Image 1 (cartoon, rainbow, N blue to C red):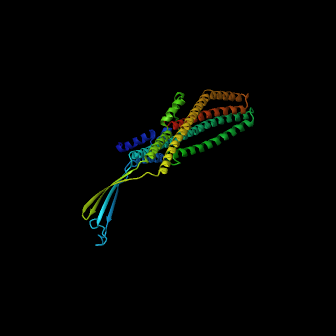
Image 2 (cartoon, one colour):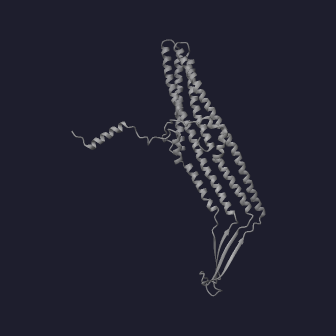
Image 3 (cartoon, helix red, strand yellow):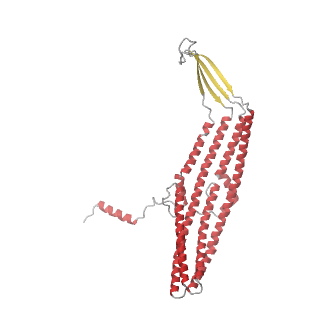
Length: 423
């Protein structure tokens, strides 16, 4: 019996579909924080709004230094031709028509200063967009670390639940043999119930964290988020030397860069206020038409007179105070971010030491204590309360280890937020 080629291809396709793994193209994001950051960078309306505002500010630079539009004035005189006709509105039929074309010319240097002020404002807006991304990425990094902590704490809690289930069976067996009190079985069951309560709390925490992360990456609150698979590598202590990080902070922190741009704009504003002591010029040319011909030409040269000295001095003092305020803001911000950086580095080092101490000393000690307590309970030399305390000590040590690693990720995110770049 011969099989049709199309039927054979269909059968082979079904077989391959059964053995081949499903494509991961449609898998949910969240296996790593880098996935979430890439998604947020392409979808965040908050970031897009900040970028568009920065682009709009840059478009204000050219008009700020441009000449104002010229003015054209048309004056018709003697509309009735000395009373010999009705009112006429045609230049050829009135007594005379004067056309005045004028252009205002600011004093030398004013246009350049206005352009520099607008450019400084655009630079500050651009740094504001960069700071918006840093703020968003920091929230994503910290939320991912909390999500990772919750997921791994749940795994640990389930492992402890399995362990307590085995201990409950041991206690029940010893009670049935008359070697232990019923209270041991009840304590084990109470511990299992508390573990179930913690699992419910952790599940609720994970739901909240998934909704928060979805909001940060501009997705619906009920969209799926993959379980976190790995954390970012924490830099070695040699890369966290505070003085070197302070230099990087001063060079790349967008908030400091924005304040520096505002200082530059304030300096240019002060120069413009001083330059406003000089008059602007208005130049014009005015041909006069009589009938069908131009009979005369006029040239106009007009100056404004900056004689409101009190007003000018107040504007100059205002510009000086604005410059002083910009310097003060930069100084205050510099001290604050340097203090925050030093504190974040210290907190990161503390979490690193806690992780090392817990992993190398406390956890092995707790496990050895538990094994000894378990053997002692099975032999009747240790009561069940001692065994529970040993089990809780292991649980706490592992929770501290998970918490320390998640805290390191949060502190790393804070440091990168201050530096303005990834470590």
